[in-house]
Image (cartoon, rainbow, N blue to C red; front, side, top):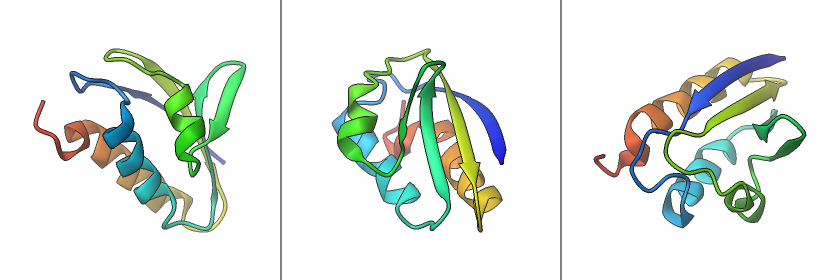
Length: 89
């Protein structure tokens, strides 16, 4: 299992479009991917669950990934988040 902390850095946070992009990335992998905060981890492949996190700019989230392709999934998620969900800032 890979545990990673990620910080939401884009101006609008994890809003609908960003959540959809995240779910698009996580949906490509067969491994288990959870995201959230301590006590509130959700399935990162479920857009409703991800949106309910209501993660604003500066929110630090825990990412837990296990199974085949876990490292590549983490790398792709980190790239998306660190690239402001491809939205510019």
